[in-house]
Image (cartoon, rainbow, N blue to C red):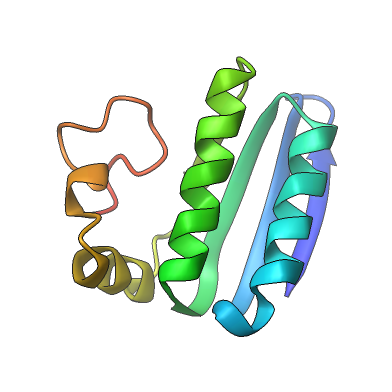
Length: 112
């Protein structure tokens, strides 16, 4: 479900996520993100293999992104954006987070 790898040549850590990211595994997901954030200045989240995602996951992602920004680090989404993420963002009212008003980078292009 969670796999972290570090590309030392680019100084980027990648956390690859698969399957369901829902409230059932929120604690485990939050811990995986926190551990990955501690290990790198630049963290990429690969969500391309995520099948389901819920509001809890969006909240964890937003909190992680804001934490990284406060520390002068970056958190971005890499790979293909799964339809489940787009749908959940729209249903949860996160559409502005992915639009032109979003300047910090995490959700850029997600709602397009």
